[in-house]
Amino acid sequence: MTAIAMDSWLDQEDDPVVTVEGRIDFRAQDAHWQGEYQSQPYFRNECSYDEDYAPAFCVGYIGHAQYGGSFDDAEKSLFANWVRIKGDSRLTADEALQAIRAAWDHAAPSAAQSTPRPGFATA
Image 1 (cartoon, rainbow, N blue to C red):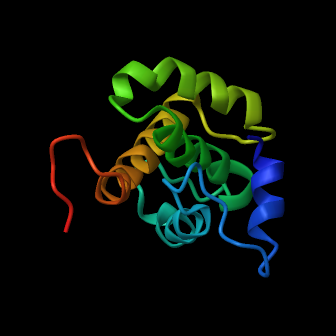
Image 2 (cartoon, rainbow, N blue to C red; image 1 turned 45 degrees about the horizontal axis):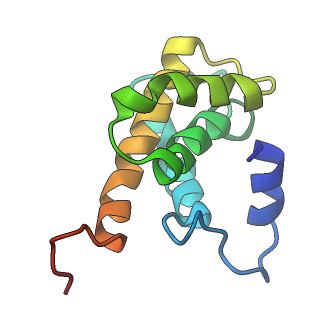
């Protein structure tokens, strides 16, 4: 999915929430990072949310929904996805990976709660 496609989905308030097989709420993730990106250790004042940080966060939370499992196992694919959709982002590779990892980790608890694991009862 491209950032442009995600943006068009997020801008359509009357449409249902877009999910990857019900595993991630893009609107909730985007809203979280819009409020939190400036408090991250890799934040730079000259960078904006929409142009610089949103593509990396998007790769992180969508990547978790797509790949699941270990971040380390998915890192190369995630970085390749960011390179493909980053547009004019001014983040360095290291900053982008930190943002991708933060979004991955933030998405992990919600995915774990909404996706039953084999052998575990759900409440």
